[in-house]
Length: 376
Image (tube, rainbow, N blue to C red; front, side, top):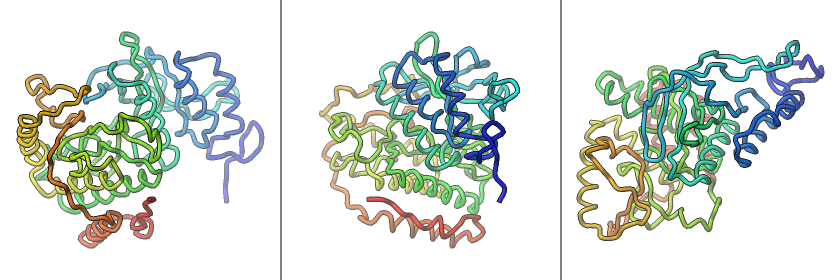
């Protein structure tokens, strides 16, 4: 079997054109030449560089002046998304002759995610850590690539440097193409999406904000669907005494009844509920499902709900006409107690098997795909 031999140490590389043994030294030699001015972010970047077995596991600190053509393209409940071109491109391999990194993708299109100032820094760091974990422990297709971190020079807010999804999010795609895509493609989307969700759950990560606005693609036509935005995600068992975990946050139609009523916290099953609503949207009028019905319910609940949350974000439909799609704190009381299927793993497996039977030409490794393998 062919393998890569490092030209520096003459040892077997960890991947093609990549030698962890040598490259970690190159990164370490450069640690004193950069800083994010935050010890925790510096450590996150340094640890990723020292432990990278593949080039796509590397993240960097990139000065903001290495981006051009920056423009806002989206706004969420906790941050703003910008389009930009990365002048230098990402690290490809070590140039032995010139003793520097060879970079690929000069003037690459990227997305910059800037966190609003009111967002707790620990939540910012949590999103970075979970996104990196998913990219390293699974692959670079389950979620969009995470290239590194930069900082807005005016607001000093940290920004994640992410892969730019040319086709945007699933919600906008279906608004335009709902009547133009056949069921084969719809089922392929859902199969790939459920596979990606399963991959995330296998890491014991709960997304907590799973909706079409957080499902991105560079080509929906070719089924390249990726899950993004882990700002509300958590590792199961992490921060068990964190009082903020009781906050109900999300996009209303995709929040499960048991979470919305306050009876239970976010779980893998709650993510699967969100997946079910997304799947339902492929069958029905997406705008009706996602907007008008939810807005009607939201208005009725807010008019009768006398319990408030101190940290709740006020709603303003005049300035935010698409606020129904923005993740935010929710507070509902006196909802009927839901009765859900306890064995959600089996339900998801049966659902995906049914999809495959409806569309037998879907190109998936069935043995791998249907081995759901959720951890309790």
